[in-house]
Amino acid sequence: MTKAASIDVGDLIEGQRFGSFQAGLMFWICTFMLIEGYDMQVVGYAAPAIIKAWHSDKAAFGAVFGAGLGGFMLGATLLGNFGDRFGRKHMIVSGSLLFGFFTLASAWADGLTSLLVLRTIAGIGLGGSIPNAIALVAEYAPARDRATRVGVMFIGYTIGSALGGVIAAQLIPAWGWPSVFIVGGVLPIAIGLVSIFVLPESVRFLMVKRGRTDLVLGLLRRVRPDLAIPDNAFLAIEEENKEGFPVAHLFADGRASMTVLLWLAYAANMISLHFLTSWLPTVVAESGVPLAHAVIATALLQGGGAVGSLVVGRLLDRIGTLGIVAAFLVAVPCVAALGHVGTSEGPLMALVIVIGLCVIGGQVGINALAGTLYPTYMRSTGTGWAFGVGRVGSILGPVIGGKLLAFGLPLGMLFAAASMPILISASALFFLGRLAILRNRAVGTAAQSTAMPSPLYQASGGPRP
Image 1: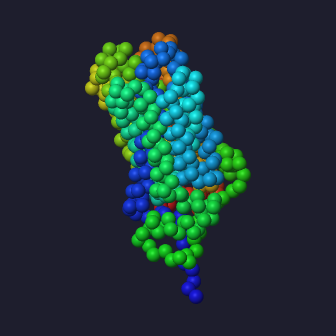
Image 2: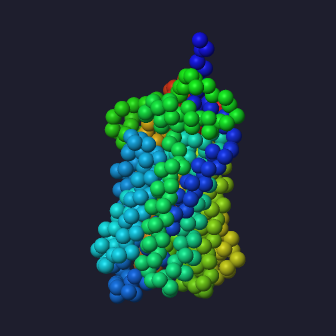
Image 3: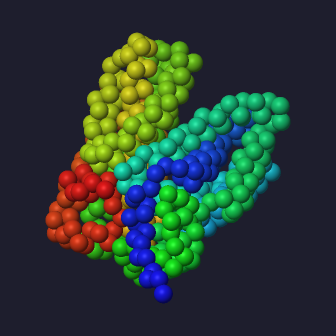
């Protein structure tokens, strides 16, 4: 009788090459993120037409904008642990269908109250699905390019947000504002149904949480077609699995300080990011720059962010959290300098591109870090709560910006204030990296083998995979 071969699932994932399986996974996740990017911005594109059709007050419509963010926060925090219980794939599919159906229903909303409720529920679907998409990509990627792959998937989100404006500009004049919600509802429903058949479940989740070695065997053969894996192979993975309330684990086993620092970094950077995306066109236009050029500046911010998603993601893979810290330290003086360029459009556009690269790229880096900081049994929960807490910053950013503008601050002081949360985020990430070094020394190399390798640990000078 032939002795069964012993195979470490983690080692097989770390040794993979980028092939058809990996390309297919990234294609479907990027498509999913592209549609989510469109859906997250769809109300903003439809708002002028809705306000005109309903004769609504512009200020009252602000609650509708906040509803999507509030729903996202609820979905990320309340549904994140479901991904650790039922699987990444199930939550991605369920989230797609949920926000698809309620976005579609928004086309038949008859007032601000109904639209607010529908956007809240749609946001819950978005919040429950994106953290699980990050977890799925992270758990199939080798440590050497894990953050880079997360960065690629968020380029899909950025493209979807930008394409939404182009699509809305064509649909609304011809078919009215409901048409953008119909498109935004049908597409995620379609991708959700297709994902049932084409999206794989995480092999790490199947091993750690379900013990489904029968399913893992087939997936590993797709991940590593270069290996001949026998049917009687003994599959194992060196990762811990603990029972109990997943959120409590975020503060157990020495993780409390790291979790708090991650949340602080998330929320602080989101304050500055949404301060800039909300008020940059208005402030720049009021300084004397033509409005059309001020809008272009905001588009360049997003364009720089798309590039930054790759650049900062690669830095995170190579040097760990110091890569994000460096990006934020570059961003701080650039944001502050916005208040001193006046109507000089060349320097303004150059600064905006660099800010987008560093601030948006750095935010994607934090997304990737959240997806790798925690072990498999709690990864979806950890990522979801980081996203949810971060959304508090996205809500506060525009509000703080509005208050500062109401005080009539000079532009120099206004943008200096906008740069401060970025500095706070950089500081939190720096201490997070230092804390990881101390934790590594305390628990030893053997204990670290139970957790998924992280860019955080690479930054501490530990062995690279």
